[in-house]
Amino acid sequence: MSREVWIIPTGTANVASIVAGLSRAGARACLSENPREIEAAPFAVLPGVGAFGAAMERLGSNGLGAVVVSRIRSGAPTLCVCLGLQLLFEASEESPAVRGLGVVQGTVGRFSGNVRVPQFGWNKVEPDSECRLIAPGHAYFANSYRVTSVPGGFAAAFADHGGRFVAAFERGGLLACQFHPELSGELGIALIRRWIDACG
Amino acid sequence: MLAVRIIPCLDIRDGRVVKGVRFQSLRDAGSPEECAERYEAQGADEIVLLDVSATPEGRRTAVETVCRVRARLSIPLTVGGGVRTIDDAAALLDAGADKVGVNTAAVEDPSLLTRLADRFGRQCTVLALDAARNLEPSAISHQPSAEIGNHRSEITDRPGYKGAFFGPASEALGTPDSAQATSGKQHSVLGRWEVVTLSGKKRTGIDAVQWAKDAAAAGAGEILLTSWDRDGTRSGYDLDLIRAVSSAVQVPIIASGGANTPDHLFEALVAGADAVLAASIFHDSDLTVGDVKRALAARGVEVRL
Image (cartoon, rainbow over all chains, first blue to last red; front, side, top):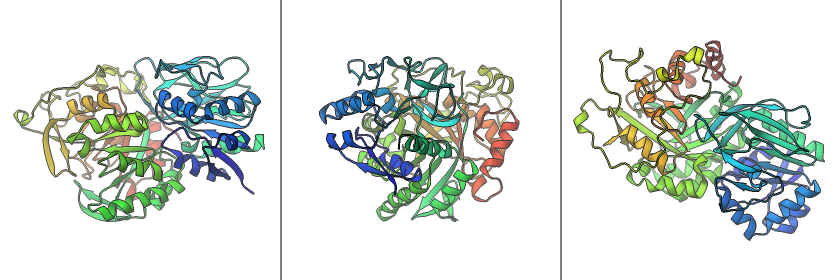
């Protein structure tokens, strides 16, 4: 029987890719805006394409922001992708007046240096020795903003685009990826599968 | 460091892959989902689907094609061709596109780029820029620029960039008429291309480099830069065009039009492209994506193998 993974609506556009990616990883994607269903979901994905401010507004108005915070504090299996990772932090240079979920300490900043922005493409991900799920290899990124560090207690992986930035981090049931596992070929599918198996 | 991207392009008409020369003389090249899946297996970094259907019926088919391709693809999918409205883009994104390319409609109304970026993010908003060499500089009209400070001129840290192989950045970026200039005559790069729309049928008189800057400022997160003169000719990319546009904007550039050999792709990357798109080189199975990547890796280019 396939595992059921709830996709948390942030008003984003690439839900079809997430659904297809979960399906290839052997899971079944479910869509719901009901906070109680998301809270009780065995697995949940916080996807993210678009702007920090707009996504926070959506999570505030539909009551799902608090649910995400509660899932992460309790260690419930939650996969955060791209903007979904950034929303966990306290704030972002992208939308300075807006507060993030604040479940992870830190601020999201724009890429600096003489590099192409947005970062589009496959960058080399190098996990630290604490990572259980994240494996090394090329993963697909599409982002203009990033964090450069995570607080203690998280295992993290890094990549380089005009300087080192956080490619992904994990702790318990939380897996947060700045890259798009659903668009990262075999590496991404295998990562989603490990996350589901480890938490199942 | 980012790897360069090798991107097979599938021109789609009425649910089939077609390929022509200079957007004309289309011939059948197979099923989109089978082609896309084969290219992913070969190591493609992304797939571009360009819908060249001419009818509303053909457009509806394109949305279904995107659904079928998405279900079988686990790499990014960019879709363009005939996108005129936010609703057109939403339909393609809902069907499984990750990025949407706009060309004619953005030229007619640049605010479309802003609206797309506001709604879906710059990451989803690609400007498809078709440029043709204009041998009569006087024919080019200089439109008032809406440039908003996004004109960084030196991206020194490019995907796959290795100074030892590519030479100093200043040599690879924006310098007119370096060794690879085709004519051998001295001329200015700027103002030598005009934007063409409607699949090459309309020459707009708009300066292509200026339009690239304006479009990036308006909301385009990437530019798919096609040389109309080279498309389907297998005579190599228009390297001067790549130099001019890639040094004028900070957003990534996908070079398109004219690829036939790994050398052509290498030259485009040296000229400043962040990604290279090709169609006929792969459709006719002369070379696999993997062959091309290994050839580039042998020349010191960072690729995902």
